[in-house]
Image (tube, rainbow, N blue to C red; front, side, top):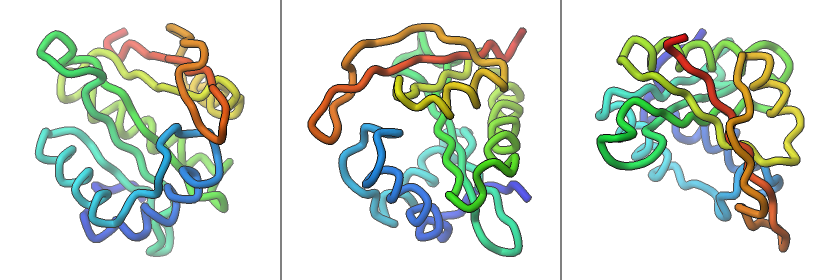
Length: 163
């Protein structure tokens, strides 16, 4: 089941997100997210009429996805950037796919045109995942991210929600 996130989901989201932050280069974010910070992100996204969703099975949150404006300013008001993460035990089950379709539908219904993913260049699984969903590479920024003592490329993949 996919539903809107609630601030009280922050601990379950942190349990998924923080190991990814701490142990991988999937995100360049350097420090774990606190429950208060995650609750604030949920509240902020929803107050701006943007989705923050969780996937839940048997009462347990197994993934989350959200989107926000790609860059600031009115000129980018219809270009969104997404985040999607799935718990290790739920990867390969279609959860990420379902979350992505849900945030794309939400963004499309809100009148947004583009959905953009910013993906670490070495994250082959995510690059394939996005390609299967119809995303194409729109740009590659060499050495854009720094984590674990080395630089990492950033790949921008996008999808035109109006096509």
